[in-house]
Amino acid sequence: MPRRWLFADQLGPHFLDERRQPVLLIESKAVFRRRAFHRQKAHLVLSALRHRAAELGNQAIFLRAETYRQALRRVREPLEVCHPTSRAALDFVRGLDQVTVLPPRGFVTGLDEFADWADARRGALRMETFYRFAREHHRVLVDGAEPVGGRWSFDTENRQPPPKGVERLDVPPPPMPREDDIDAEVREDLDRWEREGIRFVGRDGPRRFPVTAKEAQARLRHFLKHRLPHFGPYEDAMLAGDPWLAHSMLSSSFNLGLLDPMAAIRGAEQAYRKEKVPLPSVEGFIRQILGWRDFVWNLYWYFEPGYQRSNALGARAAMPGWFRDLDADAVQARCLSDVLADLRDHGWVHHIPRLMVLGNYALQRGWRTAEVVDFFRRSFVDGYDWVMTVNVVGMSQYADLGRMSTKPYVAGGSYINRMSDYCGGCRYDPKVRLGERACPFTAGYWSFLDRNRDRIPANARMARTMAQMNRLGDLDAVRDQEKRRSSKAP
Figure (cartoon, rainbow, N blue to C red):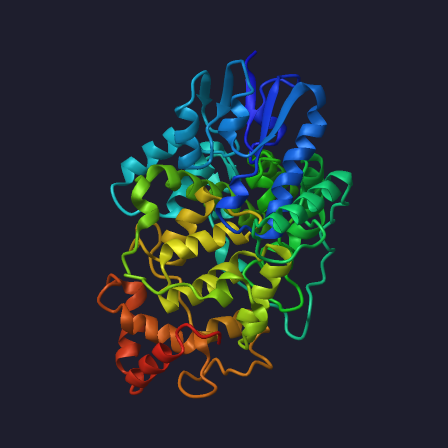
């Protein structure tokens, strides 16, 4: 049997065909020289790779080298590798002698299946329609030909603001892993690399995310039993004192390849059918994996390679250093400061702070899309090319003018006020768009729409908002105000 080369995001048992299959693992130091990753992301990736090598023992050849190419010079046998998760890595392995590239693993809907579905659409591609196709095709949460509960989506039930007057949701905390000697070795190596000049962002801290399939499966079991029932209603909520809420905190485990997504989907389905976990929570969790995760993965490969350079809104401003380096202390706007601090300290925030605080702020300021993609890829423990390219270009920054979303995900301070506890005690007022107390999100919202009024395609979802903007008597003053403070920390 050929030796299976596993990249550092292909570390689960489902990337092997047989339990005793020979394996190659490579740790490339050059990866960490190319860009300034979050310190905790670097720790997570290296720890996961080294833990997998320790698990496999003599079954694996584990090489540490400056580059993949240098390591491969020491391998004298044919290799096979599962389809990598980035275009650059795929081009690299396809150019190597004696390396066979296998179909992708770690996702549910195959690339050919998705392409057939997308080709038949002959228009804009939407997650909702793909999600229904995937539910039907893979027979998930269906009874016969009908969706369980009579509806394909319970999204409207899953948009509740946080409960009034609470600092944390009343749910059991996620189990945290215990660090071991491998983690200690990784930390020592990263400290040495920093002394040698390799740069990281964010703070070091205790490892909070799984690095082995065993750890990931334990967190999944705990989530399905204790946290999933509370997940749905508050999946879009934000609390300053509770960065985790009821989220699974499993995105990095899926993206490291530690968990088989279909096994997690079936586990959630059984939680509904056998344990009577509320259907909206179960459907919301499955939607994130079978719907959004698979949709973004497949779009990364379905769209042309140049998609990542899309910039249809003409965003040309440079990302300022305080944002790029996660300098939360430079920021007075409470929501943005808190989210940057969580990202600095944990390497993770859930999808709404990503989209409606960080991404929303970048979109309003017109920062270069490529820089925003790179920021999300570097700064998050679950960030990879395939994840962030489509999520940021198409959804967060609307740089493709609606090829995969119906409107820009841009909002003023009223949205943040409704879905969080951030606005209380903030120096800015979400209802004010002009002057000393003008909320940077509220003022930025109208400035963005005014700046892009001729670029954003007219549609029913935006018509009312654009008409409202045209009635604002202080729009010129708001526009001038936002130009003056465009790169300053709010």
